[in-house]
Image 1 (cartoon, rainbow, N blue to C red):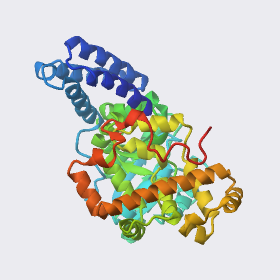
Image 2 (image 1 turned 30 degrees about the vertical axis):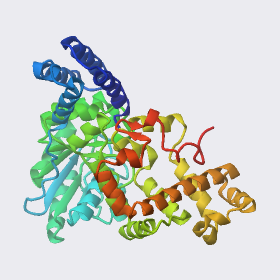
Image 3 (image 1 turned 180 degrees about the vertical axis):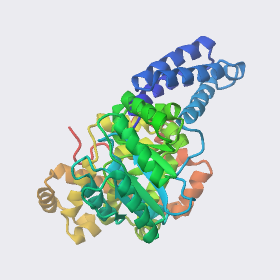
Image 4 (image 1 turned 120 degrees about the horizontal axis):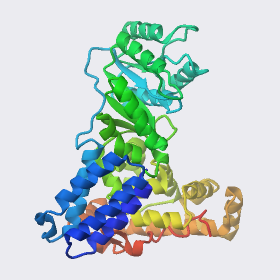
Length: 478
């Protein structure tokens, strides 16, 4: 998400940071490059003009140019304007305070991901908000659309309205309202029909359904991969239907991000969710500040911590913490760590969410490493016996050959994994000598980070490289 835009802006800001003093012309030159980067990212032209004008006006002020760190000041102004463009500092979630059943109406074009998004939000409401949700498909045009929602409902364990063949959307909406009241549902999600393009019949149907269901939320689902077209679709719907928010799907596949940056300005409505993958739990609340931080390469530690809290099992974390405190770390522990990294989105996603890790992420890509590395390492550990996992010192040449053959890898790959484990195990013993995790925390808190990890600096890895354990991991392209 936003990778190409983030890379372009990173280059512009590196030049600004490297200058001790800035002139007005320096700022204007930088803004010209930012303008090109935004247009190449498929951001709508009126949005780009407004953004560049606002940033330039503030950045060429004497307070900025005469400050001690003018480059950093300009970057802060860009960050603030990005947050404003994306919807302001406040995150706007769903309004669920109305008298139940609260109706959420999903609208959009065919193929935008409306039905899957409906199921994702149903799952989110049930698991994170503790709401009893019910879903109903009003799509009588697309073959098997109603059946699709019923299948997704079973997968996320959210009730769906039984299908009555031949019934029209408005009648389905009425029946859904009655059923939701009878079943004491807190929220009713109406998945309306899409069309291949915006037309009068579609809009008339939307209005008719809205009139009988009185929705609290009308969410426009837009495929972010369609770029500028997504903005045009949003404008068409905004002119006809009382939208309350936007959901952007396939944000994981959009390296440019232009749709996200234009949507708030075009619709005047907040982006409420971003779909980040095909799995039914891959939907995120849209936080303008966090997204702006990601675009500018500042990472998104808050989202990373939240993701960790969702995916890491508490008992496993506590057990590992106790073992680390004792200086213990076997291959079972390493396997647990690798699986947790995979569940949290893999190496690239983690690097993208950590501040200053842009260069490390680029180095990952250059080295040919991808998330298959984690799978390969898991396969190697899985091919070992319980005794070998608990005591890696048992791994002699004969055992290594057997494990390599069993995992479909090379003996060199097994050796690299064992070396990586040795280094991590050595680090755990060092932590124990420092007084365990509490001692390590005190060291970091007292400004001793450089002493503890001399290879790191505020801009990422020294020389833009990777941690010593990463190069040469199993599965890397030679």
